[in-house]
Length: 448
Image 1 (cartoon, rainbow, N blue to C red):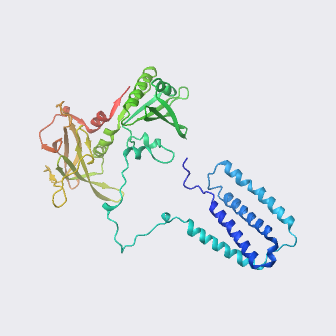
Image 2: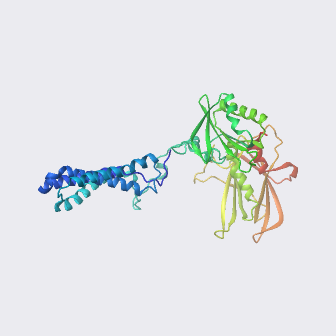
Image 3: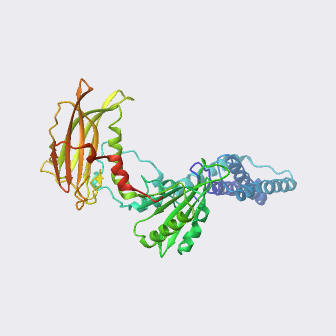
């Protein structure tokens, strides 16, 4: 279990340092004071009592900050009667005992000496923050040490507790290949029985978070995850639940058995809805999808330029930012992969650069000197055997002094592999689909 960041842990090193300081002070007093030489046992007992008192005080002081378990708290409280008993015994044995004047000087000196030695030996240099000297050259970015972390490590190995359900079942962040979400299930507790019927091993992971237990599914070394969450909107007379399932890549045997178990459960217990999300497609197309949605916002401003380069489309536009009362210029770079997905990165290849280090952009001529990109749609692909081809239909509206007019123009972009062709032919509305519809087709499969 990972400890909270604000937990104050018992500083046992400080306790030992205090004890060592008291012992050293006692020995130095023994050497330099004859009056103290006959009371060495009592001196050591004083040192022990001081250490116990300090340990008790330190832990009680941090009760409101520390989330130590009850067993540790009780062990600390047990020190109180032990310390009290030692003090009572010491007082009963005193016969005119007094601490010599030299001890007042020797003991503080011993404390300072021991603390300095302990601090120099125990302070790790890695925890120190080092400010950069502006006069010294910085290490070049390309020369910095690079550690390659796989997508699975980022998504599924969050902390020492193991897994974070907020990452696993978040379609935008997860490293799973598919997510299956079942809403309004009236027999969610029987899902484990259907998995067991497929010989899938089930194990609970960690501790429940807000009453929700993360479950791990295993079959022949492959893993998957699921959780069951109560539906707060369901009536009390008929409580319903939602089941979130994450299926990983390279786990075909497990994934097939899990989907078979889901199919059997859906036949016997019909939920309100069930859908399967292709995470790879979702994450690839999400940025483009959200960009097209924002074209309808009133903040959407002028289209600065459209350009192409080796099959890559770059859209640059300005939008109004109310917070700073200014126009913000931004660019979106998108391209089409072999599966016909509109991506917004260069994960599979790189642009070829010219001698000056910048790729050559070919700007598309616009019909208006000042215009706004108001919509992007897709032309239905009638070439069934060519799934890697995407045809975009762009709608541009003329701007006059920053205001939209009634004049519109359209551009058709055919994107395939490394080429983009532009045309202005008219397209029937029946041959167009929205980006939202295309996004839904490529990412969501309705199971019921």
